[in-house]
Image: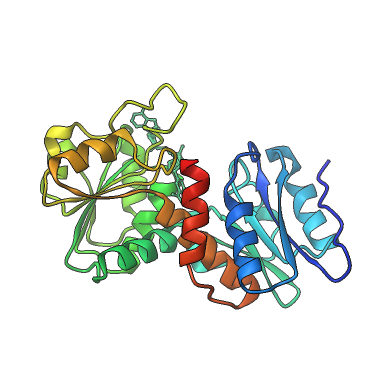
Length: 282
Ligand code: NAP
């Protein structure tokens, strides 16, 4: 049964739904942002299974939940119960948040734009002279490829274990995207791990998504995995002299895009970055 907590007084409720959800960093990010903006909102993590998708969206309408983040396994499952999708969510056929447009519940996907916003602020440059190797072709990779295509990245090469999924991801990236192999990675400016390899406390924690021989000092290497903050992949890339960024940037930026959809506010990132960094590294 899907139950959102009752609001106290004129408090506004927001939430993330999915399973597993207990270790989600979204409540920390959003509640810090609400506090920073002096908003009487509170954000909860609610466990919802895939088969509860209909019930979940019915409860969002009934309880007037004003902001909803959506994670696995609901990113596609809730789509049939919404009133509409943004262009991005339609293209990806996956959402990571829901917002109200008048009386309509609309699904959006802020993952890819979160990645691009994080990278632009880290590099302080536009992306249209950069070549990208995206390792993986799952949900995260697809959103990144789509947003890089929209942002006119010079070239996007998708390298994935299953070629069929790589080909499907490439369709999202526009005319500068193609399927590639490890050998192509060496020539790219920016290498992005969008597989789960390297996640803390998993059997693949010590594994690399790309053999290190294809990396070099003049590359920027990004891991979408954010726990640990420095994965084995980033550690080895850094030891070669590459510039490295963890997945925390994307995580926070995608959340801030959701925050803006719900509240209309653009809140400063600095305070939130510190809180999240301390939570993950602590
Ligand atoms: P997903 O949909 O399950 O896709 C996983 C991808 O990784 C697939 O392309 C899969 O290849 C590949 N893969 C899995 N295991 C592999 C292995 N042992 N060897 C080679 N390739 C392997 O997952 P996702 O939702 O895209 O998430 C991927 C990672 O990104 C997760 O760690 C997630 O936590 C992270 N993420 C981070 C953020 C952020 O904000 N930083 C946002 C979203 C996701 P096949 O296609 O061949 O199966």
